[in-house]
Image (cartoon, rainbow, N blue to C red; front, top):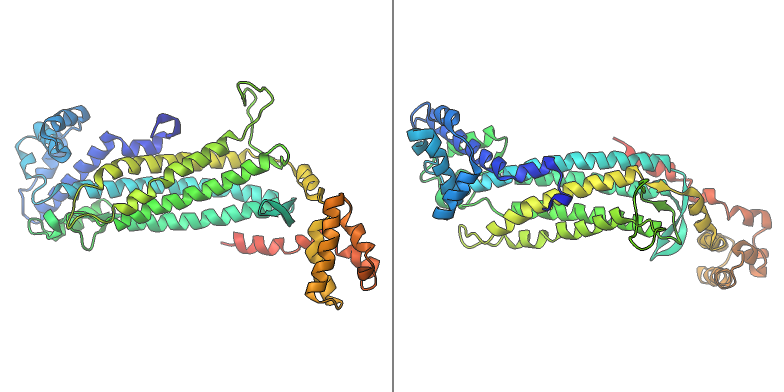
Amino acid sequence: MIERYSRKKLKTIWEDYNKYSIWLDIELAAAEAMEKLKIIPKGVAKKVKSKAKINVKRISDIEDKVKHDVIAFLTSIAEKSGKEARYLHKGMTSSDVLDTCFNLQLKQSGEILLQDIDELLKSIKKQAIKHKFTLCIGRSHGIHAEPITFGLKMLTFYQEFLRNKKRLENAIKEISTCAISGAVGTFANVDPRVESYVAKKLKLHVEPVSTQIIPRDRHAHFFSTLGIIASSIERFAVEIRHLQRTEVLEVEEFFEKKQKGSSAMPHKKNPILSENLTGLARLIRSSVVPALENVALWHERDISHSAVERNIGPDSTIALDFALCRLSNVVKGLNVYPKNMMKNLNITNGIFFSQRVLIELTTVGFTREEAYKIVQKNAMKSWNNNSSFYENIANDKNIANKIPVNKLKKLFNLGYHTKKINIIFKRSLKK
């Protein structure tokens, strides 16, 4: 992932130095287990650990010649560690190191992403509570429907990201496995107790049945989860973009004092952060299909998954980390305009009360079909003539004969649409 969309904490997980450090931890843990089982001489792990040095450039130079990254790594470690290094990797295969490391990197990345979601949840919750009863129009198909509150709109995103947090927790658990089972996964050349020791040391779970690799359905689950989270980010971003349109302007991204919106038009304040989040979501989701296709490998292994994972592992996690943090900051600094919300709510002259009138007409004797026809006729009159829906309803003889004026006025009460908001908040924010 390019620097522009990278945060250091997560990016570091995918740097070569950290990767090789994890490889060394795996090899040393395996050596410790073999020592305890008296498979190799005692003290090997300690001696190698004291002498080994991670030299990224040297490993790269060796790999250029041998065309194998794990062999290059082991050769580099042996150059500094001496004769004890010959006991490293005993009975193991490259995938034992590569897959266990990759899963650990995904786990580490996932734990940072969980922290990001927690921060985002705090930001959303604060806005939801602040605007619990801030009235705005609800829209379906992009068209005015009935009143809601901006707080309720925020609460839908709060709940969605709670679900995303749970999904990610499950995905991290799914991916947190270790395989030290040797060629084709039979343990022919390595004791299963070595695998158990390494897994415990690295805080992973033993992969119950590996082939020569850890099964890729686990990874497909992980990357699919990242894709779902990205889609939730996009849904939020698109909502902000729609609400910031000039003719709507119910919310607006914060605009810094010295910020400029357009090279040509000095008046512009564009929702660039939300637009950027939409783009990042597309990028993150693009890793899902390759991850799914990686599940079907040949027999006990091939390496068609390798190049894919070397790219989507860092790129998707780093991009999602950046996107979650950016969205959290957007929500924190969001400018909310209740006056514009009320203005927009009133531009249709009250026709959003149509369902309320419809229901009342059915209770005073009209069939639903009759009531619908009467209400729709008056609503369309208000829409076409820019006239008051209440006045049209009040002047309709069919209605006046059935509903007295004092009762009719009560049907046009905005409080009717917010009377259950507390119930929704209570069940959504309960621990």
